[in-house]
Length: 195
Ligand code: FES
Ligand code: FES
Image (cartoon, rainbow, N blue to C red; front, side, top):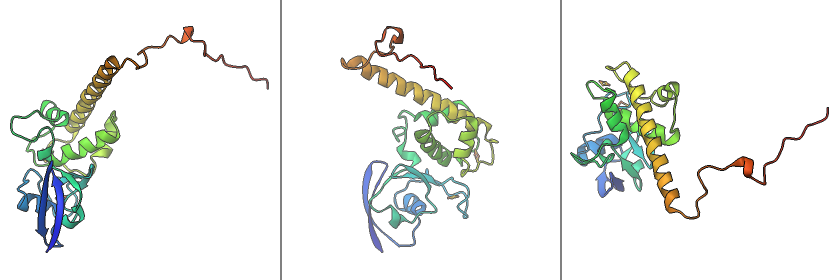
């Protein structure tokens, strides 16, 4: 047995694990984090995706001992994590855009999508498809998943813009939102270059 210290969904754990224990099995069987699911035994489906120090990983491809000293976030740690608490915008978008049917792939899809949007807040359809290519869905045909991720992206960009507007309004040193370049003394006119 090897002792590990790990923070999962905001709580600290100190546990003994066998060196061969996979992170997904540690999460499910020792911590009861059964929202993270196992959909294959070939590292292909992505249903087991969690965030390890902020990066999406397939937790069936990581040993629990490799998570020693790390922060792990599972689907149970996003959007408040408690029954009745506010959903994460990506969770909400999957529900509103019908991005799931049986729901088995959904925890992994959502974790992969959150990571994708952290890297690229305004992905095209193609970029969403590339970003979630490691996650398989047998039900939806992916169309509504792509719509859901882009819907969430728009909402999250709106929230970020509102937050930064609020900060600017509170900050007396903040630059004005619009600059009248015609009135600026520092406008540089283009210079004609002789051939
Ligand atoms: Fe991890 Fe399928 S269970 S990729
Ligand atoms: Fe059933 Fe994706 S909703 S596998």
